[in-house]
Length: 345
Image: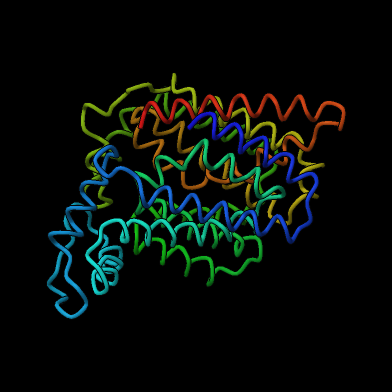
């Protein structure tokens, strides 16, 4: 798998530089389709959470003809996600078709996200595969669908269209309750954060974690049942890595680079300030909840997904003669992360 990833990365770099916009869209469509197919045909016994979805679909999901409002999903609480299973079960009881349907729906939105936000969409696909693909589309499939939908809605923050943004957040909430975390982002973006706000915000996040850990844990514990994340606040999940989590410093590096090159990068997309604020928000959550490594990782990853737009544009800030060195360095880092995610999964 690692060799296949490296080959795709090299292909994506070459193709982005030499092909027409029409051809790039075609390859992007094919890439998203292949990723959806790989996720749908995965070995169901090797991936955490998949067995729960399979059991729910096989034993607990009715067809539309037998469905009633009294039906309850097994293993999760989002009823709209259960209804997706009801829709598929109406036509077939094949589990692979069910998983393919969820993956295809997720990548339909991801395709739109790559097109909307990525200066280099295929490069963005490489980032997504490395950082998020295995967890989102093989394990956290409700979150994978929900986050892809919410990212589509992020464009409406830039357009100051709160009705459409919150509409898409609501749709995302129907499939995963963590979508509620997207609500504050709209108001945060209204502040139009400057560089010093970003740096001071990160300092505040570290201070909160170091000196107010008890208060944060009490607040998280009080709301765990209502927000359905009880599993991630039990003792086994506490302080696994804390502030030693390397992803904190990976995101900080990306955030500071994206902020430092504001004058260049804001010309690459009309969504620059929205993306930067969303990524700052993600990093703030990752640091502030670092005493719960799993919880902080899952909640922050909603908007850290925008690395698919950030990292390719950062590579483009290098002068042409140094750009290949940047591509090589990014490729090594992304391949390493992909390898670590394979082993962890």
